[in-house]
Picture (tube, rainbow, N blue to C red):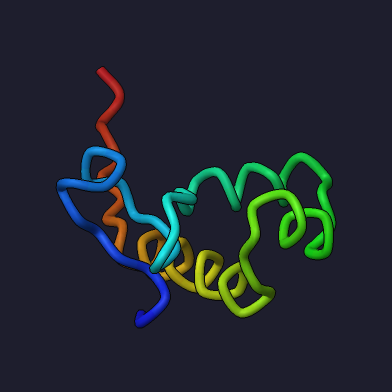
Length: 73
């Protein structure tokens, strides 16, 4: 994950695109909201590779989630 960094001094430690202050969640939210890769690249001055890195980062986070089912009372 060369393109994603977490630094407590940048955006309070939120994961961001390296060399920017663009948070991963902003990139993902923009995609979810219907923005194209091109629009995101232009608006936030990042690359398509940065967008793919944000998606990969999110996929790894989700794949490591543990699900704990609660018993019905």
